[in-house]
Image 1 (tube, helix red, strand yellow):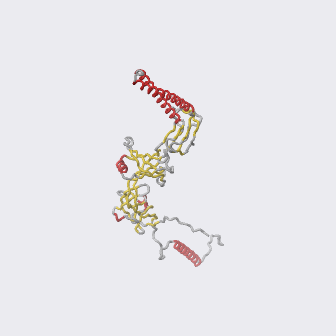
Image 2 (cartoon, rainbow, N blue to C red; image 1 turned 135 degrees about the vertical axis):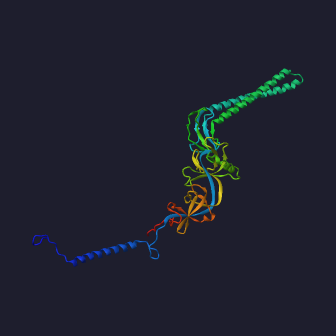
Image 3 (cartoon, rainbow, N blue to C red; image 1 turned 60 degrees about the vertical axis):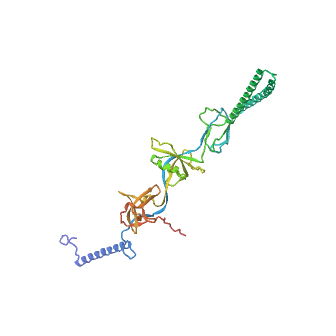
Length: 406
């Protein structure tokens, strides 16, 4: 704005109006701070007495110590083996005329499974029987003459030479009869080979020959296999330092219990079968330093299959009234094992002895027995953030459920 004389002029503001505007801005600023403070205070947690809560504890999961009988096990990897597995092969040459079983069929010992052409063998058997009849008739005549000559020789009715010749003829014909009987027995055996029967009770495998093929005894490949499935065995290896333990188990009044698991699902508890320890090998492997052992299992449900790899756990002992916790409860310190014991809303580090451990549980004992007892509450998860005396907040393991709206 310019004045009348051409110079730059400033507008005129009274001092009282400028001071009033400044005070209004200050009042608005103070009121804004009050509103923010009230809003922040309304969001702060309060205790039952209306005061703000203290610091929140470290969230953890807890578990109570259990007291129970715990069996001890030693583990190894084993292979399922059939107690009887037979490859069925022909014992005579001939054409396979009938196959009376199907692949995968269950058979009993002695069941007829296949038939080989038997016409040639039956003809040989009939011929041997005819020769036997002829020899028996000649033997009968020779026997009658021999008796007559013996009577006549008493009064010198026949010469000694004639009697001896008749005796030799009788003996010759008798041997011929015995030879014919042996030929008949051999032909009957050959005839029995034309009927292939199951040598054991088990399951028929995949066949390799179809009816109509000419079978030879020299064939390297059999018709099929028959494998016994129940009972069944598992062969496994254990370190040689367990030999005394295994010997004690075999000499015990009751056979040692053996559990078989799927090798990749042991921790999930997929138990396949329970059996008994039967034997250990007569020598230790010099290459691996291990000892082979065998257990036998009832397998009516066919949960074990020949050739299958399984994890074997042999029960060696039972700890009575042991204090048991999950494996993650026990922590490893610089010098010893310890656990975090819950004491109100805080935790305390308690040293313990680890008596036994496996993938499912640990057996512990307090260095001072009174420190750990049945029912003692210990931290199960969340130990990485803890230290002795730390405040905790126990999280519930119970799943939260949302009420169903009607």
